[in-house]
Image (cartoon, protein in one colour):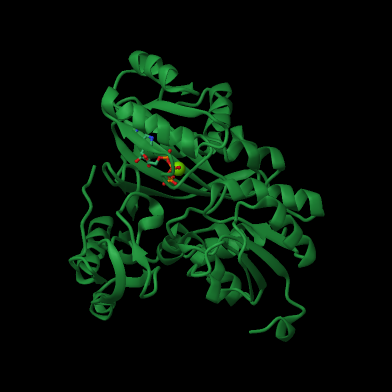
Length: 418
Ligand SMILES: Nc1ncnc2c1ncn2[C@@H]1O[C@H](COP(=O)(O)OP(=O)(O)OP(=O)(O)O)[C@@H](O)[C@H]1O
Ligand SMILES: [Mg+2]
């Protein structure tokens, strides 16, 4: 496809072309939009779906603004990356483009601290935390909150600056890393909440919040603390827990005045009931839209595109037509080393219920130790008659896939579970 062949097409700027943006980029191509994708990584796996690739960081606001103006775009979207969500809202406001999020909502959503301030005003529950600018402040806060603690950079995501501190000896390095990653010079120290993790995938239409699905999230243990390894649907929460979880997700989006477009709310459900971990005013970064489409028939990527372009959305598009009893996305982890090839993909694809296998990296890519979301090597999406069967199929499929890397053992690793 070239620009000339569809000069009539609407022009969309997509911030990021990594694994988290793949589904949306594919949907944009299906719609024959003219897509300009920005990512600083020339090997970003989403670039092949773009009409124009711009080697610009999805966080370089000045360069993105210039690009957006020069390309005469009709809309801009940041699926899967938080900081860029606010950049997209600001660029849209400056260029007078339609946009689902107000600048204010977007700016609140991209800060773990600012959103908590709004949650407090709205009486919404989350883990106890303190803010520190230095190691000594963190130690004082830790003494009050008690270990184990989770240390975070309030304006980062994807486990950048995120660490578990089980005791004082782990606090210093964790705080240092969080402060180093932080844009604001602040770090958050939060009580570790035991419980089950869930994600509420939602879409707001003309001010009304629709919870499309609630998934279970299984996250990795330290040193890859918090990295999502698996999402499965439907959630294993009880009916009562589910209702309360959906209720706080809806109130969280209202607290940030999100009236239009996709949202992604992370929750931990423990003895005290559901607590908010975080809200993102965007599509999830783990192919949630594809899981929802496969399981519920709701075309969430298309809806996000429509919202980004300011198009009218028929509420019927949010009505689900269950296509399976269960679904699971399981992420693939490769051993350290330079990727030679992946084995077993065909066999895995042939298993019953396997909908899709994505490999994020080409041969030559060097896998570093598994620490954060960006270290994941791919994902398997499965359907089944229920959640358990879908999860089992995803495990079977993942077990068949072996990443051969140069200079290391070629076994796929199964990371420790929480
Ligand atoms: N207070 C907490 N108690 C227990 N677990 C937590 C807590 N905070 C974070 N986690 C764990 O870390 C994961 C990621 O947390 P968070 O969303 O704050 O970080 P992030 O860097 O934005 O990650 P992501 O990009 O995956 O959302 C959570 O899903 C959970 O597994
Ligand atoms: Mg998060």
